[in-house]
Image (cartoon, rainbow, N blue to C red):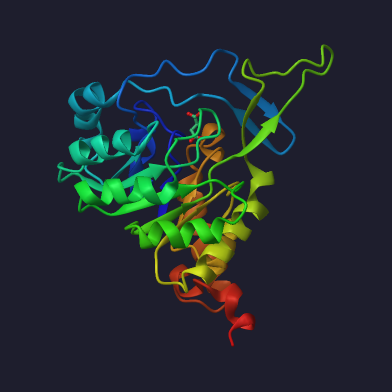
Length: 284
Ligand code: SIN
């Protein structure tokens, strides 16, 4: 299963790529509109991209009335990313958006590096959302948690159905000559190729901690079918493409066919058969 990472496709690009994705993941919605952080908020860096978008979005009401109907025209499974400042914010969005049949999954963004962190803990937010919606809830976690596997088991116990691993890492890029931060907010979220081993480690340890019982969407620097296969071997049941989409809208199609080829070359009839293969040497 190949998805886009939240925020990496907009309403214009989505229809061009949608057919080659198994589900479309929308940009994070918050209860009120957010203009996003000050410009500049994108900077290229070695091996990746730094962003400080700041969850720019039109807010729940406009999303519900104007954006969701457009996404529904894609006629494909929709995952809606949910943000907020506290558990009540997340629950309010889950309750309203969760009532739409077109929405398959609510992805709880518990990890945006570009806004102040939610006051509530991850498990508390998940429990509040679970209380108001029967939809599958995926918790999107930060690779910078001191113990991501512990948080993963906590959110699953609180009612999450799956995990999205990982969001970007906090990073800083300085201007070559002025030595000032390239982003207005200085520190931003770093994604791209350098995130790949970090994402692999997070998926690997969360798969072990949950004993492979919950679905995991692996993401972070995937640019090829082999990168996707690595995440599946570490424990992912689906793979999301992020920054690669900014430069290559053909990436989902290409990664899918490379993934099938790479899996077959290693004796797996389907990529899904490789899930958890990296763990076998460690089995008791
Ligand atoms: C952003 O809007 O700042 C990026 C979204 C995220 O990293 O969660």
